[in-house]
Length: 326
Image (tube, rainbow, N blue to C red; front, side, top):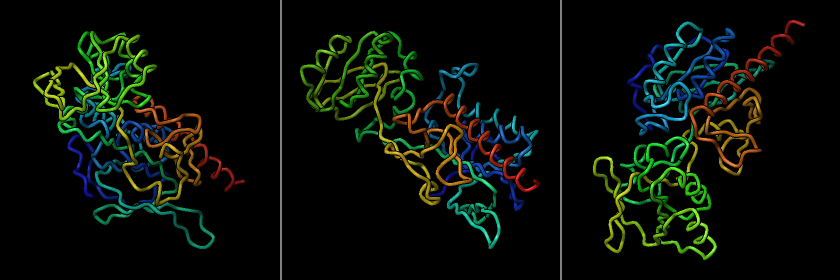
């Protein structure tokens, strides 16, 4: 699948020069990894497909000094700050990454872009993120990122005092109800046809949430109001909707490189972003440490992960350099 060229930044200049690091992904994790490498004077090429998980979001939140800033502005500013360093930003889609080496040569990674360009790097950072699969309720796509979200820390405050619904009967939705109980003026659990047992119902009632088990036929939008149209004809006006989408890897590179995946479907990494394959690092919500049950979808978390992956790559490259001279 081809992706559009990013409208807010990367240049399309080709490069044939070998590089210390290939960073795949132009979101916060990839940008931070590239900056960390650039500041230690490691060369890097960052390939940005122009497709981002938070693209539907008009403003990002819970990011100190950037609270309320449009994500596109954040990315554009980040790319400007990469300019003084030995970091090249390319617009394009990587379609394949493979480890390659000749007899007696160290492993290198070769990436093929959709337009036929080839990049060779000593190491690679995967920062391609995840993609969300929403429940199959018509109209939900149009609300996603504005009036429908998954993270109360990132979006809950904007619905303060309003009628907020939590869609679905998964265990994590109970957590969302608990968090929004301090923020919303009214709470409703839309179980979308699932029955609620007595204990769950009691807990929801204690948290101040009403329960509606009638399936939602569709959602619609009227300005800043989300409307849930139920199967029995009832329509509920809402300030916002929280749900837990399923997610998947947005790119095939983990599979292509043979890195180990956790039960969550995310790439297993250590504290410095190293994967199970030497020379391959991962950062952002496509990866997490085994101690975490799932990825943390936040800009701050992605930035931290990108910095750690860049630091881990730099440390490993330094060790290789020192071994070569002594």
